Length: 343
Image 1: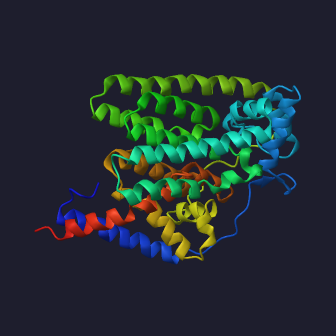
Image 2 (image 1 turned 90 degrees about the horizontal axis):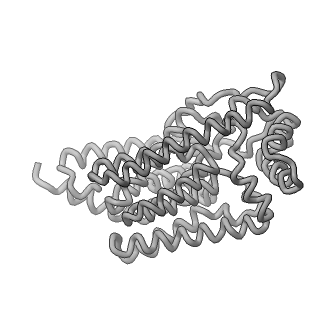
Image 3 (image 1 turned 180 degrees about the vertical axis):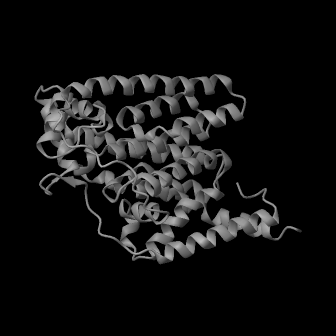
């Protein structure tokens, strides 16, 4: 994306990267953990395991979810604090072990899709490096305990859809994003991003498909609200809201917390996270125009809306985010070339 920059534009980009790097070097590590409420010992992961098991025993999803939310101090209002039932239904039908295998298979398919996508677009190093980094970024899939994490399923599906959409395969990409939305509503920003580029390219049928998905999802969320509301009681806990305003350091800190980058010492880990996020500036244009705004949307969610306990929203960027490191060399070359151009 940087290949066509003028010298002045390249200087502006370089200055921005330097400022962000300076920010990354000033970030201090904070204690991580899981979202915990009520007694302080019952995590959200345990909550979703118990919900799936209750559904597998024949209890209705909404009754089970609100009952367990209430019993352990989790909010039931607003209605979005109760997850959509899709993942619980899948896990109840398959069992947690089979669901774990399915998630691992989806990650492997995603890595292969990235390799196929980059064959005509990337260098040999990028074709090999990016899929491997997708697997590294999705390392938490290896944990059986995290199979109930809605953001993890959505993040893997979004990464798969991104590879398909970058190759122009918008119909399967749309279907996969519909699956991601059925699991976690925070996947929603992907839809207007895809619709924008379809409209920009004059692909009216594709744009209509994404807009139709948006309309259908609005109806689905309304039906979800209608299903949750009768089970919410006046004495139930209320959400503390989503106005964390944690600032620009939050996305880097949270990305490190949910990836293997946490094996690096800070502030080096935060600097590498920054390179991963900004590396997509050097990615092939069909990929960059999807990946950059999506990761930017996740960054905005984390910086402006997520409370510290919502750090796990960063999992929405997994496993895509680490793949940006594969494009850092190309980004550097393009910047150098632009800086050498006559003013």
